[in-house]
Length: 250
Image 1 (cartoon, rainbow, N blue to C red):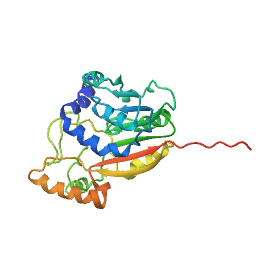
Image 2 (image 1 turned 30 degrees about the horizontal axis):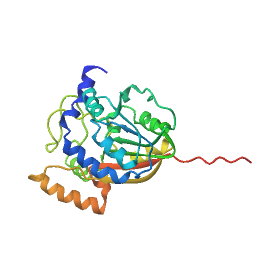
Image 3 (image 1 turned 30 degrees about the vertical axis):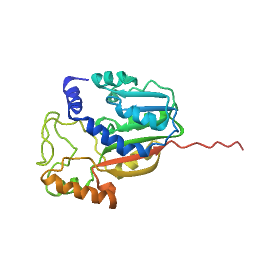
Image 4 (image 1 turned 45 degrees about the vertical axis):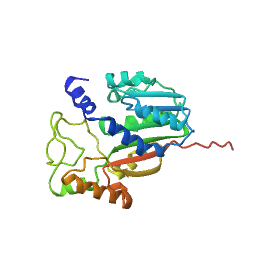
């Protein structure tokens, strides 16, 4: 990974806060099946905080956290998470046996990788039959992005530069967050279907923003869409399951 690409991705680490992690944990935990997961993999584990919360909820006793940020993995390791440094853009198979895991979490990762196809094929390979994965990612067709496009602005959570955020006066300025693949719910559904995974549930997630000025109004709209049509919210949450193949002998 050259320096430009490394910097493009690593800046994401500087924008995350413990509050962001807590909000994510609160939203995703009900999607996991309690006490029903012996082997759990967190792809994009960051500092291991949510990894342990999910593992405790699911009853997992074999827990692995993957990430490419070495300093965050060190923190996860101090929390007694078994960690593995991975670069998903290398498209090297993760060093685990086929069908090992009962549950996998892929939190805001798929939008960062060059080949979502590789990631989804790995998820299918690593899940045992009947097991499931939870995935979150920004929503290209959110209500904010629909308005942004109509105004001729760059959609939120999309980036055209490896150094700057440009094209949207209401998007946070500064360094990009490393998003190169941003999905609509329909596109995500269709791509997942190509890799043998069955979608059980797909909804939107409201991302917490500071309720000041114009953003105070947007929070009200977010809450309305969360109740009426959640797939207009800023993020997508999807639960997929690897089907159990029934073999019969004639």
